[in-house]
Amino acid sequence: MKSQLFGRIIKKSIGLMLAAIVIIGIPWGSLVYADDSHSSGVVLEDFQTPDADGFPQGWEGSRSKVTAQEAYSLHKEDNMAFLKGKGANQRVYTKHINWDPKTHPILRWRWRVISAPENADFMASVFANLDLDYMFIPVSTKYVWSGTRKKGDVKDGGMFGAAEVVVRTGNEQFGEWIQEEVNAYKDFIDIHKHEPAAKAWGISLQSGPGVEVDFGSIEIREK
Image 1 (cartoon, one colour):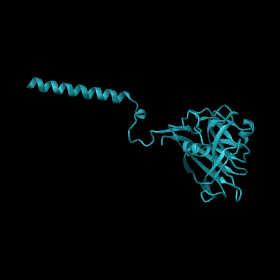
Image 2: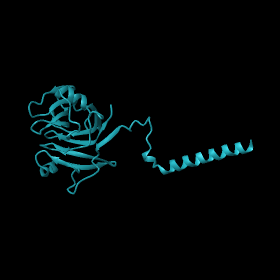
Image 3: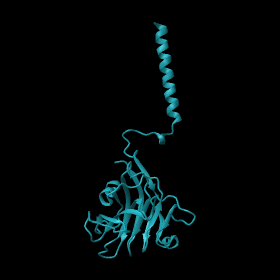
């Protein structure tokens, strides 16, 4: 009886020692819990990494990177990095990002309009470029902050333009960071009437004429 009891104590002690070794050997940051609400999120851009010119790494200007650098610049506030667009006449984009819109259909971003002309129709936008057409032009859904158009309005982009969806309107929240969330995959199917590519082409950002706007982190999530 004593030998059996001693054997059980030894086995339990060994089990506890092995568990401790496993726990110690795993960095806490790599532990994933089933109820972790952030486990399905993937950051596409947090503007923490500038290139040699101080521009967001991997980003380009739709017309010229040189002129884009005159209108867009990286900033930090309370240890949070963001891209500021001011007086821009073009958009900036990053392409060939690792994003499967089927597995991660939710696109989420933060933005903040600082100032805009009165009754500005277009103040800022985020493009989800989920495919290319037969001329290798990105097939895009452009999510717009408008000063005049009604939230939910959808506008066809025609042959070469991006389809537009108004996600925010008005100027009541100027100066505040606002988080937006859309189902980019569903919107693409509803608007463009076909499946997107297996991997998204990229993301684009644009500030409106005479508008000062800040773009914060951009991420994708599972549904």
